[in-house]
Length: 281
Image (cartoon, rainbow, N blue to C red; front, side, top):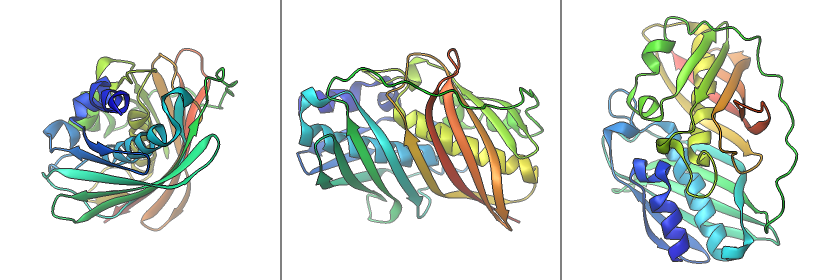
């Protein structure tokens, strides 16, 4: 299990988060994430990308333990993350457990909570083991119209603690659309591949949220992500990533925003998903 611990605690992204693997075996894993300002939104609320990252970590730890070190490389082919409550300035933990192991995939459930037991997020994931197979062909997503208007909010949101630590840059954020660049830097990197998939899930979450804000504009609102549905199509290549998001449906305070992540250099898809976002006046 030392290779799993090494991946969790020495991948630059998770080392920056401060994640610690407390225990892992072929059926479960326990991960601790101490509070850090750099992992938060304004008001010391844990960024949703951190909870999603714990779900990805929990799923991969259990899958790697269950399937063995030679089964890689791995990627979280599908994840459903439901955000249940906010963690404000406090440590959180993730408990992951194996639901079913197949020939080349594992289904894992992860619960994120405070150390006092308050539920923060619940996730299910399907982790795929590639057993040394060559990378699959990647499709070229449509992207956007190339606009470069970050709107009134973009420059300020980019400076919030979690996004600032990741050096996310909001290039476009108007008319229900958003485009965000996530650079391939130390703070975002995986030990084995390109950008860590925890950071990719955070990018999807953030892009869907920004597309929703791009529809309402700034105001005295309360907002949060109730749910993230994501598919990581392959281990990330070693290049910057760019995410394109747009609102496809709105029902009052609830927004459905689709997002796709592609390589900034090659333009080929890495991940996709739907963010359900809520903005309340």
